[in-house]
Length: 305
Image (cartoon, rainbow, N blue to C red; front, side):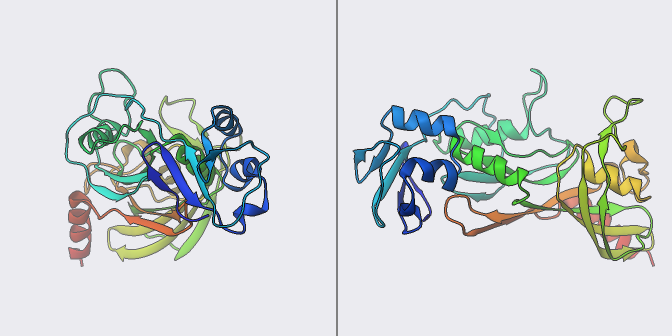
């Protein structure tokens, strides 16, 4: 499939030879991963056009024909837009990657929360004239900074969710931990579940959900270690729990044994998102620069002989 372009409420693509090998209904469901229910509704409402003509699900196609899908109808934002500066790392017709500051919630968890990253993204959509519902694909803790992925229409949301489940979205984090990590790289494969003695804490437990974190040492300091982490799964507090479990809690992360003498929040930053674009296949790579407080921490760590 070529990159699908947005024209008003329609996504438009020129079919390749591979696309034309199956009936259009099968292509949408199996090849392009559009949810079955949405495919049914599109054909029912005559919102699948081949060279401008509505077609049934079993219709065949030829290479070079134009396919149009009406999947970008205007939607309510879903929450009140907030006009705050938003750092956009990547944006096109299908998705947006925004940078979250530490200390800001990703999404409201109660009505009183009126300033979250979701609110700021709603402000961006409102400001740029995009009638798009705010849909974050993954989450970051309140005190974690870095890159967050958003889907701009239901199809993009469905595909990106599946890519996340299938581990086809690479998420790289940068962590500053206490102690000297012995191995240059490693894999932590330990299940994570709730800690019954604490409402918000998680812990490694045999009855938990499978969780895998890959890590690599980037820099060593007298007072700690800078570690790059790549998530294979996405459990709540996964990096924090796993690094604490191997004896290297994040600096500033009091919930999991970190001290706050050098840093006042968990020293964790979602640095890079990397994946193949779901509507064209080109590589998307977005890097969130190290925030000022972590840059200052790194400077302090480097200065200690």
